[in-house]
Amino acid sequence: MSFSSFSLHANLLKAISNMGFEHPTPIQRLAIAPLLEGRDVMASAVTGSGKTAAFLLPVLHRLIEKPRGTTRALILAPTRELAAQITEHLHDLAAHTPLKGAAVYGGVSMAPQESAFRKGVDVLIATPGRLLDHLQYPYARLGGIEHLILDEADRMLDMGFLPDIRRILQRVPKQRQTLLFSATLPAPIVELAGEMLQNPVSLNVERKAAPATGITHVAYPVPHELKSTLFLELVRTSASKHVLAFTRTKHRADRLAGFLEKHGVTCTRIHGNRSQAQRTEALASFKRGRCRVLVATDIAARGIDVEALGLVVNFDVPPLPEDYIHRVGRTGRKQATGDAYTLVSPHEEDSLRAIERGIGARLPRQKVQGFNYATAPTERFEVPIAERITAIRARKAEERVRAKANAARRATQGITAGPAGNGTAGQRTRSYRPAGPSRWAGKPVTGQSFRRPVAARSNGKSV
Image 1 (cartoon, rainbow, N blue to C red):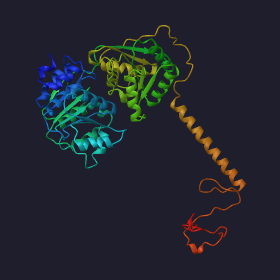
Image 2: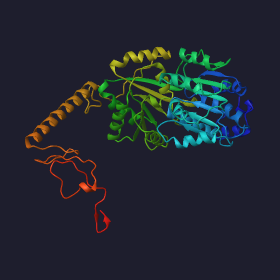
Image 3: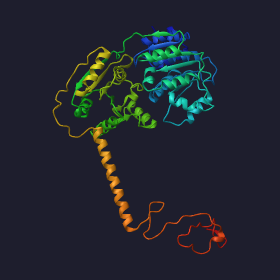
Image 4: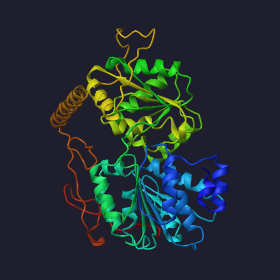
């Protein structure tokens, strides 16, 4: 089966050929035809299965002949990275058409996004929060929307976007085509689909969530304090040019990136405390091969599309099977192959067993030959949070004692602090109040409130 069998516009087929796509993926074979017919669709597809093209191609096909100047398609995505990724795919697929798309997400200036609203760009790809920011203003109108797509709907639910989505639904026309794509379909998502979709075509609803085929899974049991050292060894011995590592917290992402850089491994990082410019630069640097390792929190689990990403490492075991699926789904994309390693400390074994039950497969345990699992770490990777809190409290207590000592010393010396915190022994501070020029004669009486006139004149000039 080829893409030409869908009767897509010739300019879209040209773009598909230029991008090197020969045959549609399973989700594309199932979704494109009903979407071209204008049907609502609820689809469950694993990450990396080609679902972005599955919804973009039919929407672009139906927009090509429409007049410009009206925004007719809205795509909602949970993260900035995913919104940027969809926008990039749209530009590639629409390269030989007049259709334009624009990304609307936080962390960057609203001005170019406002311009996209005013011009009526054909397709908007937005995160819910930033879209609602724009909808407060008259220029942001969604009355022309004919196609509404929710991508990674389950992730939006996990991130608490459901109330935002309901508010956005009130701003778009009820007569529209609605598409809901999700890697998993928990009950709240199915309920939301019932509210949004009309007589939808359901695709792969009964399919059990599982990682993409072509991924080799391995678990490496290791003491918690030796994780960073083992990870460094795995990176050094891996043949993969790109390594993506996921940590549990932003603090641990920073610590791991610093550890790798200290040991000569080119590295960058992405997490919620990084600015959008920093996150964009980090991802671009990783894609272009300027750094070998990208350390990320789950914010990037569904927003990274790197060609030939050979290795994904769970530095920390993810809490849910769904998180594991999306993390490792960054490799083995588009029917390619890849490796997924998980570093498991003793207290994470229960979480790993829950993942194995969720995906219906046991991860083989392996040890790295020649690695000393009994050695004491040469440096601490992370200070426990209880210890960090104790140190912060001790530092603040020391600061309070120092402040009291300084106050006592100043009182003993008879120093009175002025407005800027400075003072002179034996002098009283003076306040200023309005006073006319007639009251200004010579020096003021000590202790009397006074104010200098607006302008004192000398030789006819203001000074």
